[in-house]
Length: 221
Length: 221
Image (cartoon, rainbow over all chains, first blue to last red; front, top):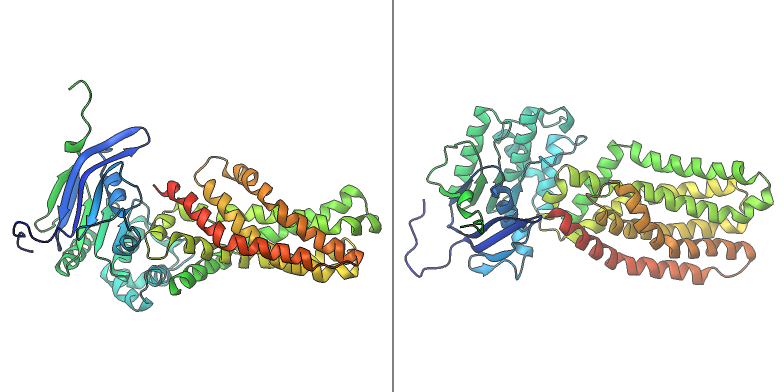
């Protein structure tokens, strides 16, 4: 774990300040700040609908925040969003798999589109114990296997920021352990992980953020 | 560039493995054209007079039929979200998908068109211009269609909305495409019409991906 930065040191790796987000007509959170250092992990918790997914989408740059700003190494993202896309691995609720492509082809595509090569694919598959399914079309995979393949995308091409939305949905215990190990390794290599989860995971020294704390107050207060 | 080619290759592979999509478009084209002799009667003079118009209008409708698969499936299974979070700019992604769409629907339409024109007794000087004009016009159909497909994304009854959005924009291609064939049959120069079709394509190449990517962003929020 990195030691806490001295005062007035370089800005945090990834930070947000004064964030507010609106979905439809509803304000889901406001006045939210976070700061993550290199190698950090931020675990988002909170009731259903408290804005965990919304915050992850804001962090990914998919949803522009209503108020507030994000910064990477102190540089505001709103001014130059393009490099942020190369930095992010976002695994949402959906697995983004094509029924007719095999597991290996799927990963090879995601590696190539991010400027990598298919050479990383066997290792990524093995990491989530999918090597025997490499040549299977995705339509024959079970829900848990599909989830593991989606997570294997994280390893097929490197990106410093992992944004994981309920990554353990449908995973068995062994696969959850694989994921936790992959996260630990990613952090050891200087990566950052932000994940939303309802299930307690064995993540070492996480920062945590309870989204319910940032719910907009009702005007009656 | 390799990311661009990765998207083209993936979409081509998807289209080939789910071969029914491209085959359906061609089958619709053939079937719809063969309806006309039943409707207007089998007189060769009449059919040869309207052959170019029938082939072009039906080709537009066939292309329209295939547009919903441009983004819809990727949108529904979460792939579009993941594709938007790669270093490849969204407009380049749209261009790659248009290229794959043209190769799997536009090219088969160009190949089948002269056969169908023969069925309608098109006069001999019309075939070359028909193929040329369709080869120049069909890429514009894919490009302009992408704007409509992006706008209609996530809407209920997207297919109907798509035709309302896109068909008016197809009119210039239709007018000059038909005119090229008719002028050739009448013995006039076809160059101006082909040049206008080329101009339309040259304008659509940068503008359509830009507009379509702008239309995709709200759908991804």
